[in-house]
Length: 73
Image (cartoon, rainbow, N blue to C red):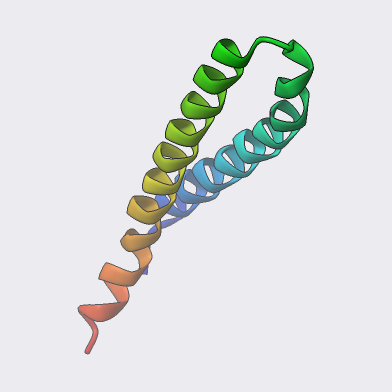
């Protein structure tokens, strides 16, 4: 089981990822109001990359507790 500092770090990272995701949900509907297709396309592409990166962080952090639990078997 992760120690308290590690548990706190995991929760902090998970909370930050959730906050980033909520912020990105606010950006997405606003992009079309830019009325510039080239910029819209670039912003959507960047939002997609950001989403992938946030998901990678969540997966890596999520492995910490699972790795510890699997060593008990």
